[in-house]
Image (cartoon, rainbow over the protein chains, first blue to last red):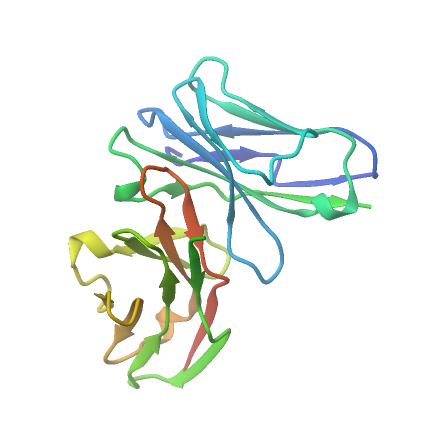
Length: 115
Length: 109
């Protein structure tokens, strides 16, 4: 599968625990994006990497959220001290150097449930 | 602030009927607009882009700057068009896409 891979597909965690998600983009894509989608809403932008540099962050990305892309390949999104409001689908997407204008390739997402 | 509005959440039509999925946007600059689609149990995927002015799977979308709209149209809907459709706006000078809340299209046989 040469698409965008996300792991795990589902995660159930207790409130207050830390969770980490992984995204493997399409190998030749240097741009990587994280979005969050809650029920009945469209995806909301969280952050964007070009290679290993994190170039944009949303105000949605509170201090409890951190994202990394250490070698410009895979990325991780960590949420510390999870809250029930963090329950959502977390989507990763990638695109080539041409960028967003030519469209993203999305992964299947990681569904987080905080109980 | 940039905003994308999809005023209808649900649309149900019969096969062969025309469909129009509405999208309005709020943006002070020159907008770049997209339609993304999510079929059942599949990933969100790009359907078409404003800049390419192409027809994909029989769908077209025209940017109307006067009405700040980017409605998606298809003259004869097919059952396989049933899906969630999201309109999205690219913010100028940014890589951030702003999505609408989406609309569920159901095409009945």
